[in-house]
Amino acid sequence: MKNTIVAVSLFSGAGGLDVASFMAGVPVAVSTDVNTDCIKTLKLNELFKEDEIIEGDLHKIESSTLKGALKRREHDKFIVIGGAPCQPFSKAGYWVGHETRRGINDPRATLVNEYLRVVSDLGPDGFVFENVESLLHPTNKVIVDKFIEIITELGYNYKIVKANAQDYGVPQKRHRLFIVGTKGKFKTEEPRKTHCAPENCAKTGLLPYVNVGKVIEEFDKPEFFEPEEIVDGGTYAEDLKEVPPGMNYKALTAWYGYPNPKFVAEKRYWSFLLKLSPDMPSWTITAQPGPWIGPFHWNSRRLRVPEIAAIQTFPKNYKFYGSRRSIQMQIGNAVPPLMGKAMIEYVRESIE
Image 1 (cartoon, one colour):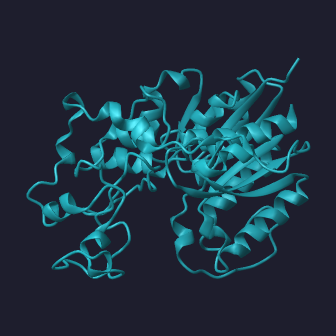
Image 2 (image 1 turned 45 degrees about the horizontal axis):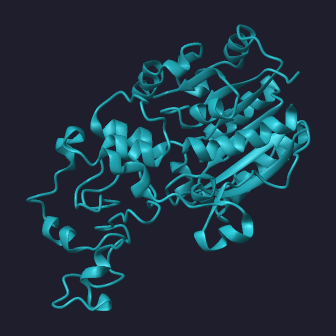
C-alpha cells in the first residue's frame, strides 16, 4: 500500500500550490497566509473543508502550531510547500553574516528564512519551494546558495528546476524557479513535462502547448460581463483597438510599417497595449497590471476574472473573495496549479 502523504502549505495565497497539491494526490493538512482576503478565498472553497487554515504572519506562527495541525490529520508522511513573496528579490541587496545554521541573514530573505525554519523544525519527507527566476541573479544567488547549504545539511537531496508553465499544460508563458527536496531519491532527472512546441510533438510524444483561446472562449459571453473590463473612452482605447491579436504597441510604430506612427518601438514597456491571440498561449498574468498594461483580450477589453483564473488553471468553479483589485492580485501571484502539480508529483513519487 502507498503511504498517506499530506502537505503543509506556507504563503498559501489564493491556493495555487494548495490546489496543485490536491491534484497531485497530496491533500493539504494546514494552510497559512497573512492576507485576510486570501484566507477567505480558501475558506470559500469546498476543496479545503478538512484543511486547517491559519491566518497570520509566518514570523509569528510557531512551528509547534503547525506540528499540532499535522498531528490532527492522519498521515504517514508529509511535505512542505510554498513560495516566499518574491518582491524582495527584484532589488539588489547585500549579504550579512554566516553564523546561523538554520537561517539566512540577508535583509531580503526573512520569509525564506521562515520557510527554512519550518522545514528544519518539522523535518518533512520532502518540500517544494517556489520563487521568481531572478532569485538566481548574481545579486540574489547567495540566498539560493545558502538555502542549498542548509537543506543539504538537513539531509535532503534537491533539484533546482527552472520551469516554464507552458510545459505542464498551462495556457500561459510563465517562468518560475522551484527548489524541490526529498529525503528519498528522485525517480527521474526532472519533473515530467506534458506539453511542448507543436513542431516538436512528433519527436517528443508530448502534447502541443495549450492556446489561450481554447480555455477562455466560453467566458466571452454577455453573462460574464464585468464593468472593469471596459476601456472605451480611455487614453489609449482607440489605439488598443488597432493592435492586432498577439501584438503590442509596436504594431503602431514605423518598425511595423504603420502609417503615421503613434509610438516609437522600444520606447515603451513590452506589455503596453499587449493583446492576446486565441491561437497562442497567454503572456504572464500579472498581480498588479497598470491601466494600459496587458495582456488584453483580443476583443480589445480587459480580461475577466474567470478568464484570468482559467489561464492560471484554477478549477472552473473556484471562488475568490475580495475586490476586483484584490482578486487580480491573488490570481496573478498564484502558482498555476497544473505547474505546481508536476513539481509536487515529482516529490511525492520520491518518497512513496
